[in-house]
Amino acid sequence: MAIPVVTVTPSAAAQAYRSVDSGTPQGSGFGDVLQRAVEGVVDTSKDAAAKSMQAISGGGDITDVVTAVSQAELALQTTTAIRDRLVVVAAYQDIMKMPI
Image 1 (cartoon, helix red, strand yellow):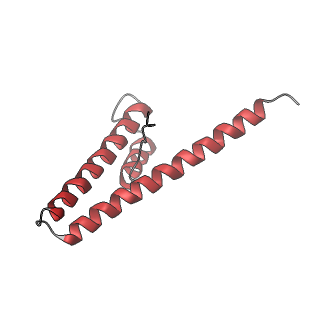
Image 2: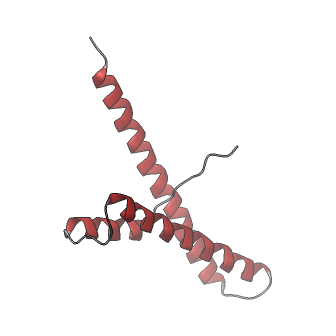
């Protein structure tokens, strides 16, 4: 069974940060902000896949395909970096809870 990967695009993360930083809630909390960010990533991935399929079938612009795939790759790299930092923070917290 594959582990689902959640990716966050830099633009979605920036939008989520701005909504939290401005103090104007656009939902009921952090979960809603994260949900919107994930939905943005899914849309980015679907756009890249659609443009790639157009290019394979002989239509579409190669510049659009490269741009869409690059955005999807950047989203994956951003998500991996966020995941790695969360794992390090969780490990640090576990270590700090250990009795000496």
